[in-house]
Image 1 (cartoon, one colour):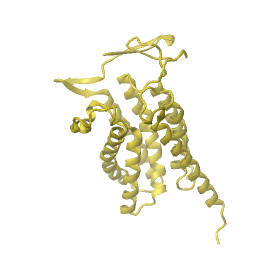
Image 2 (cartoon, one colour):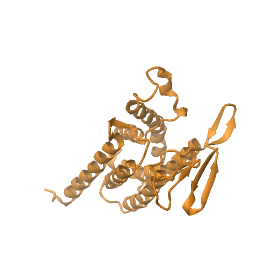
Image 3 (cartoon, helix red, strand yellow):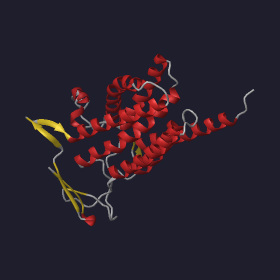
Image 4 (cartoon, one colour):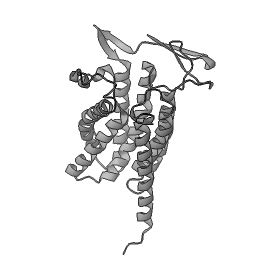
Length: 264
């Protein structure tokens, strides 16, 4: 049982991270929240895909491949960048024990991106158009998924005196970075849905997602206390976030230039 509170707001929550206890384990709220996020993202992507005259079943087919590979990618990313601080060398089986924690969203996104490229190639689907309708689903999944961190009392920032400072089991108030990222993703979701609905040039929603999430994650990651480091003082997620945001900006510029360029 964890007590997560926002003292200056007069809010306090006693939370059991396990929804249903079964023997020594059980069904965790984190997994349930992630599952709900995946299902809602699937429904949203299917709706947007259908609005473009495509068969939403293709989204389901993609998810059946993207989900397992996404989990694998998220786990391998985390293991790779936390190898020195983990027990993976002494006990290699710890690598597959994802229920002990240790999934990195960037690893999942990278794996999903690769799966999408292969999937679109095999199905003869325009990748950028397909990615555009998947981008809002990613934002929705991240918006909801971060509440799993709230339930677990994790992924928070350093100490703060701000009115919304969060305490965990009576700790000093810290930045609720899970909330920052959830709200940032929610705003991004609204922007992306509008972009998809307006049928802007292919790739616009994907590139805006890269820019929006990358910029937000760069600053939010700087507040967190559980970051993975590629070098002392250098947070790997900030590097990836910066590259992602710049890639999105470059993609938007190239798309805009290509749209204005007169056809011969």
